[in-house]
Image (cartoon, rainbow, N blue to C red):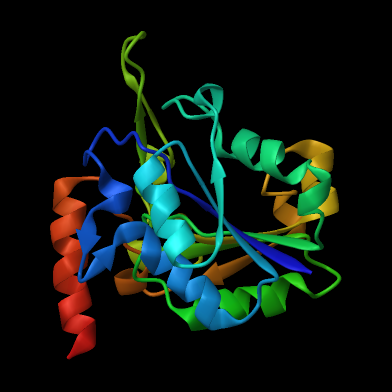
Length: 224
């Protein structure tokens, strides 16, 4: 038994009302709902929100709308905690949970199906979608002097030598429910997680006005 979880809270710092805003013909949250339905993998599709408009969209799409309490709706709340609150309930007992964030409207149904096939294999307990990125990264330390580099500066690598480096794109996560409830983390462990690569055009996350613009133009390009 598989359940899809679509978190779509009211608050959004980058784009006010983002999850219910029209994206290429329908509310942003509805893209994830429709993809979940089209995959035909789920016994239940749950939309969690503190926004009545979003809950109404879910009801019109004939999926389960679950109001989210204020304590789990803030900017600093871990999404895993929202998931735990929902899936610890007896009525939501299942085998696999699939997290589909509304900020990834350009994922494909094939991505959802392919990642499900992966998590069904005994060696994997969770799945995370990623895109290739050479990650020449830095971390700024605002409370301290200087910054931290994520590579050896005296052995600066070429991007061609980092062909197995990836970034999570937030598009699809799968996790076995019983293992998730044990640790309240959708990534069970690196050694038990399947990494599924997606192309950059389907990996776009919509968090800022520029992201929105880029995603719309990418959708138009993909539709040609």
